[in-house]
Every structure is written in structure tokens, then in C-alpha cells.
Amino acid sequence: MKFGDFVSSEAIRAELTAEDKEGAIREMIGALLKAGRISSDEVESIVKAIMKREELGSTGIGRGVAVPHTKHPSVQRLVGTVAVSSEGIDFNSLDGEKVQLFFLLISPPDRPGDHLRALENISRQLRDDTFCKFLKQATTAEDIRQLLDEADNNGFVS
Image 1 (cartoon, rainbow, N blue to C red):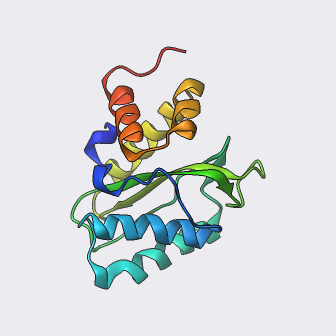
Image 2: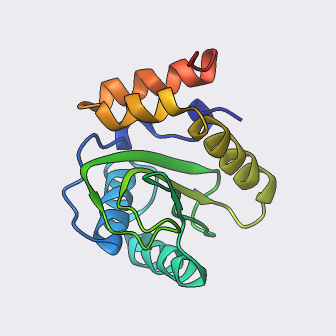
């Protein structure tokens, strides 16, 4: 599975303004709403589902990265977005560091394979220090989109 299979280009955010975990999640979900990927009457339910997942353990996986995600019956297919915070946000990450790169995923409950393949793709790409460095330096949604395309097409050569 590639970023292009689930990342909504219109929902990419190059500069999150949120200052905390829930704010970042709400901002990304708001971007998915604005992009027409989720319906307005499901926003609160999706935020609650992701926050509930965060209570089980932070999805801040370290190295400045978080992958907040949930399964939710309101989506017919896997949807996601990518966001960057130049300042970093305290996300209770495993390594205690602030998070700058966010990959948010919402998948239908009956498609666990898609969910796992997306998480696998994200974690594989994030092992590439060059990819992470360029993403953290991205200043526009277009820059982020191009980096995701490059990762999908041939990866990065460190």
C-alpha cells in the first residue's frame, strides 16, 4: 500500500497551529472534513475514537513522529492525512520528544488488512532518516505531497 492509496492530498497540512494532542487530532480531522473525506456529523465521534485509542498508549512512536489512528464505521475506505508541526507538539511519545510529523488514519472496521498495510507503509518509510528530515523541513502542502509521491515511487536514497 502506498501513501497515494490513503492520504487525502487536500487534507495535508504543512503547519499545524495546534498546541496539544487533542488540538492536533482535531485540526487533522477538520482538514479531512474540509476535503470531503468525512461527514460533519461524525467529527466528534471520530475524535473520541482516536482519543480513546491514545488512552491505550500514545501513538507517538518516537523520533518526532505520531500515527494517531482508529477504525470507524463512518468511512467506507481507508482515509488519512499528513501534517507537520515545526514547533513540535507534546504527544506523550514513547521517547518523550515532541512530535513534528503526524500521519492520521481512519479505516472501516471491516477492513483491518488495509489499516495494517497503511501502518506498515508508514513505519517503513519513517525508518528513512532522509525522508523524515525532508518532511520536517517541508513548508507547503505541495512539498509534502511531492515527498509522499517520491516515497511511493522509489523511496529515498540516503
